[in-house]
Image (tube, rainbow, N blue to C red; front, side, top):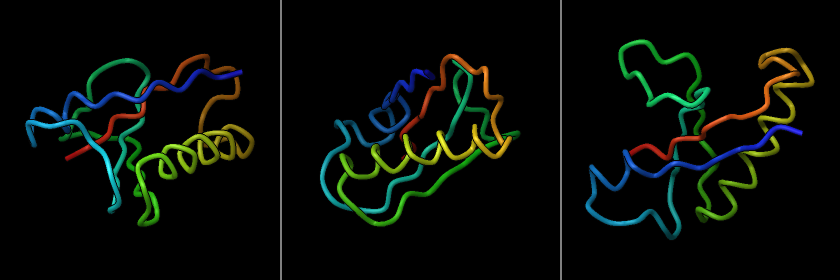
Amino acid sequence: MTQIEFCNDEYVRSHQKQPKGFGSWMFALTGGERPDYNNMSLWLTAPTSTLTDAKKWIKAEVKKMMTDGRLPSDCEEVDAWILP
């Protein structure tokens, strides 16, 4: 099963606080490296929700993407960067 790690470094760098609460959440999916804003391959915007629900949505989306071939099915780890 693919491990999804949520990274909030970019959010904290921009806002000087931990992400939390209700809002529109954007994520960048990478294979371990920091997001490349000039050449980003996968951006996802969760429906307006709490951060907890947005993380659940991302997990479900990653699973769907692996099923339909948008992500390799043998991918062991995905980093989901919470973007500012």
